[in-house]
Length: 485
Image (cartoon, rainbow, N blue to C red; front, side, top):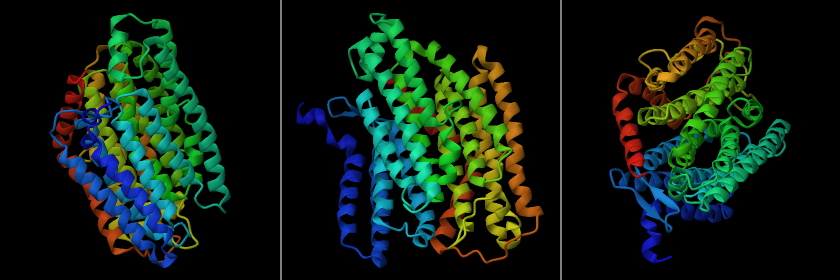
């Protein structure tokens, strides 16, 4: 391995983020509790510089680093910028909540930054081993973050469930990767794709490995029937951590699936399409139906996430460039909607009170008309109502499915269950605007959160009014990644 093959400049956002996180970890050791704002500002600064370094790579041809283990291309650059924005929003929204619950500590910031680093590594991996390292860095950080309130029984229980089932999923994923390595003799995704296409490998062993890999992916995405951890973890985790789990990591999940299935195993497209059809249909159906019965808003959003991840898989299983671009666009829009939705939930929480029940949203239009309208934008977008970005995300995925001759029935199923899902989103709007408020306490919001949350919610509407530019960005990024094959 030569200095030229290392090509450290291709991985500069990750290198910067790692060094900055380690520096913040050390600096925080010497700060008192009343000085914790320094750690907060340094964390936002680290994320901002990472985003700037990522943007500098836009438009450049694909760059490899670390002797081919790492690749920086347009797809990874777009996803990384989305992750930086998503994690930055999580930290801004979490500030007031964490300060009154003894969570405003260095561990919150450093573990969040390590989780972001894991996401970035996942999306730029060109090797099975690197994919696994990035996934584990993200997962281990999230396990610890869920258990951050050590005296909270729900949080501790959620962390244990998340850890045990996450370890099981990681084991299955690793076992599948070992089978793929045994069949091809390589961990490099490009070499695996070439050998699988040449037919010089054991097809049966490759398919067995693929089954375990897709099972692991299903666990990590929270797709049915591997979704059992999602509602419990969403409800038991502190709301800022629930927001983190439900937003930026979905971008990393898309990158992970694209790298391993589309770039690593294109010769087995027919096999993994069939598996993803089952996961997608079950997720869209069960996620939307079960969400109707929820009275806890975090559990409702958990089942909503399951259904949205089903839509994300629909775009991928289309097996076309348009499908991959639609799925990528869907992941970006969903991350934006999830941060905004949980941001409003955090807005309603205060010292000694957790806004977790749907009833806590009653009469929000009387208490805060502005943020009631902002939550309306989020719910309408998640429901897929026209002119909002969520509508165009679903439309792009359905169009990609319709273009595939054998999958028109999938588009019909997706539309039908989207109509079912609209019920529980519109129920939230009804509670906010038509029910009397049971809690008349004033909503106190920091100026920075008020501004950023408003911009976040309005961005959902703006993206719906002009979705084409982001769709083009996703299409160009996917096209570059596919040409690189």
